[in-house]
Image 1 (cartoon, rainbow, N blue to C red):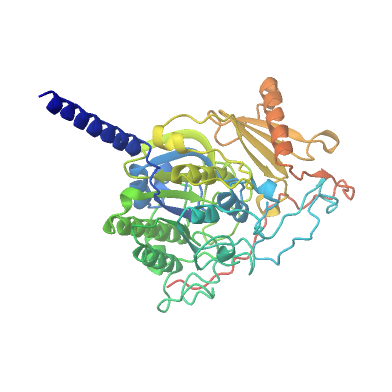
Image 2 (tube, rainbow, N blue to C red):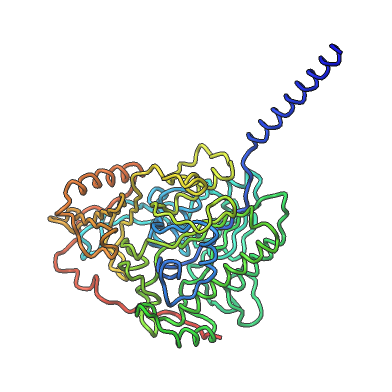
Length: 506
């Protein structure tokens, strides 16, 4: 009996130990590696979707995705133009740190160009720095990081981060379909004239081609190996083209707000939304939605300077200005992040986030080791997404030190802190010193009332943040222009008309 009892106790001990080990291993199990789809729209403004209040564009699949995950109300591109923001997504670095602050990815690479500001045109009060025209391959991209962690990496759609030698296949992507130097497609209808993007049947729409290539990519993946896929749409960038039936549909439609009224843009936006829906359907059909993280974003605000028959391509109201300008209309963008069963469905966050945040977030979520040589400017959103814990950050920033005549942008650095936004506008103060403007975005989302003179303590506090930021990223800043001549600025800021190359719609 005693021997039997000892045997029972020994058996119980062994079983208990094995159970404990099993439990411990289960709880210490490395986080699963979700598939990742980064769905990026080109030139889509914050108000260009029904999830943010548009009553003109029809975007039911964006609504569908928002119900699946978390919508962000205060998401910002790192720059109000496309290439710099794309670079920030891939590197996790501020565009000003990379020295890529304008969209010159279609131009010849300029690695030897002196970028620091020296002199400018006579009408410019300050001389402004130049920008690289490519994303250096020395950068350790998020694709390279995930690839080291066993991911298949793919890019489908627009790239615009350099000519040959700086394409996706040179930056860690196993698959590259359509990603070359083009700022916009030569044509939205097949033949597309993009060498590595297959043409479809005659007059096939390019957004549909991106969708078809995405579906094929998804079908070719195996469940035992995760993937990271950029679906970077050419829409809704110029040239402005849409199928005739959709142009007719939106021609007959009126915006109750009386703001958005471009039938061509309505059609382009609907095709992008349709693409998103087809991709969501395919994830469901393949039974991989539960293990797929989806990021929906735009590279900058909506275009409000090109000329179309009904005026501008879009209207960002109540935000001011648009693409190419550092006011809210140029840099606040729509954002949804979804991961079924992990991110709370139909949730909303008012946290300040930026495109640089996705790199560290994806490292965290996939348990991917950070490359020690890759400095990151973004903040991981993992705890916010998975646990709804607030971010421990004081501010976000944008350095856009350029005159952009089409958008009347002056060289500016911005800082967002809580409900406040401070602008440092170079050369516009006394004796060409910087001028500071402060806005309370909670009360004045349109940035119409400068309250800097009434909030001097807030201005001083945010000026310190801003200057520390410029120092931290080693930013190239504007300097007084030795060629400046007073009374020579007769044209800057006036209305300009820019011819838009167009093609027939079908």
